[in-house]
Structures are given as C-alpha cells and as structure tokens.
Amino acid sequence: MLELQEVSFTIRKDGEEIPLVDRVSIRVPKGHFMAIVGPSGCGKTTLLKTIAGLNPESAGALFWDGRDLSKEGDFSPSEIGYVPQFSIAYDPLTVDESVEAATRLRVRSGSLAELDHRIDRVLEETGLSPISDRQVKVLSGGQKRRLGLAMELVSDPKLLLCDEVTSGLDPRSEREIVRLLHDLSRKDGRIVLSVTHSLSHLELYDSILVLHEGRVAFHGPPEQLTHYFSVSDTEEVYPRLASQPSERWHSSWQKHRESYQKMMDKSRALHIASGDLQLPASPALENEKADEEALRLPSFFSQFATLLSRRWRIFFRDRGQVFLQLAIIVCFPVLVTIFSDKASGNIRRFSDTRSADYVAEIQEQQSVRSDQAKVGSAVSGIIMFQVVLLSLMGSNNSAREIAGERPIYEKEKFGGLRPSAYLASKIAFLACLVIAQSLWMAFFVNFFGAFRGDFLQHAGFLLLINASMTAICLAISSLMRTAEQASLLSIYLVGFQLPLSGAVLALPEKVEAFTRPFISAYWAWSGSVESLQIQVHDAVNSVIDTSLSAQNACLYTLGAHIAVAFIATWAGARRPQWD
Image 1 (tube, helix red, strand yellow):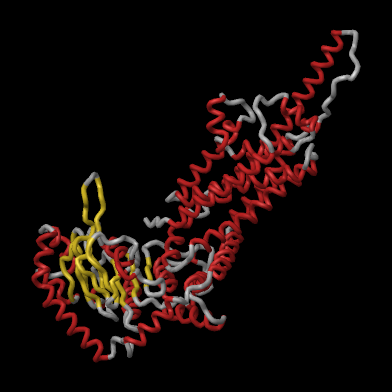
Image 2 (image 1 turned 180 degrees about the vertical axis):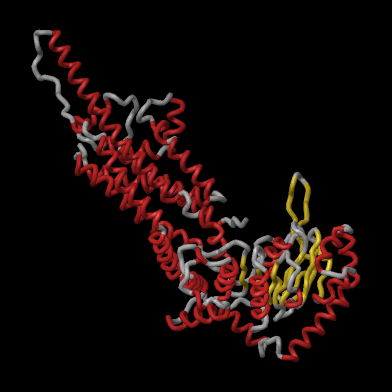
C-alpha cells in the first residue's frame, strides 16, 4: 500500500514560502489504478515527483508497504517506474533495441535466454511486438507512450507513475493507453498512478484524485465525481472548482473523506471477488521476492558496456554526424597544409667572419632577421592554427554530449544507472574521437610539411589540447540545463582561446598573468614551440613578444585542465537536473 500523510512540498519565491502540494493525505491499496486530475498548475506533476522522491517533501510522511520512505530509504529502482511526459528513447534506435538497452541497464539477467524472454514479454504486454524493428523516430505518439511504458516495465515495478502519458493523443489512442494502464494495474498487485488533464475514460479508473491549488478536493470512485461536485457532466468539474477557494474545497473534503474511502474499499472487494483484480497470494513471499529483485542491478561494467555499445550505434546511424566528423578530420588538416609553405623556408645564419664593409654587414643582419621573422611567424602561426582547429574539434565532440540527452540520462539514473558508468562510457567514446582527430592532424600535416622539431612531442601536445577542450566542453555540457546553452558557451570558450593566448598579440602583463593559466591553447602552443629545433625556436622567439613556458609546465597545466574538467563533469552528472 502507498500512503501519504499530510504531505507538502513548498518552494521559496521572493522570500515567501509557496506550497505547490499542500497537506495531501491519501491511501492507495495494491492493484489500484488512480487518476490524478485538476486544472493546469494545480500540482499534479509536482505531487507525482514528490511520491517518486524527485521532490523532497517539505512536511508529512510517505509510506510504502508500511515503510516510512523519509526515514528508511527511498524506493529501490526495481520497485518504482516513472514514465515522464517527454520521450525517453533515442530516435535512431529501434523499439527492440530501446527495450533491450533499458533491460540491460536495470536488470541483471542470468543468461541471454532470460534477457530475451523478459524483452519479449514486455513487448507483448505493451502491444509493441509487431513493430519491434521500427526506429523510434517513425513511431506515432501513442506508440512512443507504449514504448515509454515498456522501458519501465522491464524491472516489474510495483508502483508505476505516469505523467501525462495521454496528452496530445487522439481519442482512440488515448483510450488504448488508459486501457493498457488499467490492465497493468490488474497484475501482481501493481499500483498505477496516472496524471492527466483529460476527464475522458474515467470509468476505467478505480479512483480519481482531484487537486486544486495543491490541495485535495476529492478522492473517490469515478462514478461519484459528478455527484460530489453537484454537476451533470465531468467537463463541468473544472469550472466548478474555480468557483470556490481551494481551502474551502479541502475543508469540505476532510468532512466526507471517510465515507468515500468506504465506497472504494467496497468496490475493491467486489473486484477481488470477481477475479478482475489479481493480488499476490502471500504478501510475505512477495516482500521477500521484492527484496531479492532490489539487489539485481547490473554491475558497473555491464552498464558501461551497454552504454558504450549504444553510443556507437547511435553515432553510426546519425549520418549527419558521421559526415561532419569525416569532413572535419579531412578538411582541417588540409587547411593547415595550405598555409604551411612559408613555415618550411630556410633560416640563414649570421656569417662567422666580420666584414670590413659595415653597410654589407648591416644588410646581412637585416636579411637574416627578415628570414627569421618570416619563418618564425609562419611556424608559430601554423602551430597555433592546429591548436585552435583541434580546440574546435574538442568543442564539437562534447558540447552537446550530456546536455543534449539530459532528460534520458536523468530518467535512466532514476532507474538505477550509475553516473560513474555513464561518464566512463562518455570518456571512452570521446577518447576514440580525440585520438583519431589529433593523430591524423599531426601525421597529415607532418607528411606534407615535416614538423621542424620533435614530432612525437608536438603530436602529444595536439592530443592534449583536443583532450583538454573536449573535457572542458563535456563539463559545460554536464553543468548546463540545455544543449543550446552548452553549445553557445563552448563556442565562446573556443573563440577566446586565440586572443587570450598571447601567441598572436602580446597581452598586458596584468591581464596575461590572470588569464594565461586558464587558456589551454597557450600551453599546447607553447609546449609545441619548445619542442622545435633550436634555430627554428629562436626564430619564433624573435617575433613573439611573450615568454614561453617549459614543456613540463605545459604538460602539467594541460593535465590539470583535464582533471578539473572531469571533476566538474562528475559534479554536474551527479546533480539532479529534472525539468
């Protein structure tokens, strides 16, 4: 049984406490199908999230099978299923692949046969078997809602919470979904709570909970709804609610709640006697089974492998993303080589013998310095060009990686996904892109114009700048709420790398001392310059009015950037960011 005792949830706005859910008290027995209805903004979704534990209750207590959830721990992932209003599946995947991934992330299966049986059972139960090979992006609204239910049913939850799963559907699809939820509540004592704005098909519910401004205005059998509000049709309930303050409706309900509870108990007894409602034969055995199931979450490595496999599958099915990555990998190195001719020019040295002709000697010095300036400027520019292009690649790699799938990630985390497994899969996926992009840039440019220094050290710094910017943008993606915010901030970050690096124009000393530690591009450029041949290095120094840093300092700083970015990514991934 699910029981709420004087549960409230308040927020603070403009220094004032505002109750979104106010003193809600209800009892929901096993095998019950309840609708939560009310006008927009009345607290329906807020109440559902409070029951789920996404919103911590400000007052009152929630009990599940006699267990005080606020004192004895929240629901285990296998006990509860939450179906949000938005889609929780990836468009490129098929229905079968989506359900399989959900199963592998939530349930530890003993064998492939057991896994396949669970997937087939859920697909059959939700009516998705005939379309199991279709991609999510071609499904209708009703089919997507069924898929959302299927992905929750893989763990056989005893409490299923559905948020507006019928919104936006045509009348036929809406009735099919409500009928499906009704049937799901009739198996193994499952409780199904459905938030809905619609007052259609109420006869399929066991009870209706009406909220008004966060307070309970009614909770009873659907056939008593019109009688209680003294209206002739259910469509008149909402206008009737608006005719009186919510406090008056709540006070009225407190006087009549016991009589309506008895009606629901009587109706429940009739359903059990007729065989319409199937309850567990032994509550003790059922609780023992639930305890065992709660321990059957997949291991870290199992979740990691599932996520990484799914990410690569999504990547290769997104033709636009594949084409973009190939275009970047091919075109960016070509752009560098176009401007690399001047960097390969000879650098003349001063003559060892002193000339008696001072005019000739001055002309020679001017000529040598001119050569140094041309080659030094070209070499420095080519290195910085590579660094900036790889910074762009890093931004493109990860700016939307987490923020773009935040709703799905939050839902999977609620279902038992370990943030550590999620981040490990992201790092493994991005590491492959970083290595391919950086090494190809280094080898391609070196092949068409050899790097005038230690090539391996230069390639290492190119790898580090790409890794650093990828990690930093991944942190931004983890901390931002939307993909648009993350992309915009990442673009600004890359845009400021060049002017603040000091590699093109020397910055004022006070500004330089403050900004330089945070500019990854400077440390990658500086480290690469330090790996140049002595003569080329001197040529670069002759045109760059800034002090270069030792290679070890460059390595340690870029490593620190990556480490700090990973810490920030972990913090963002751990923090709940439900809409």
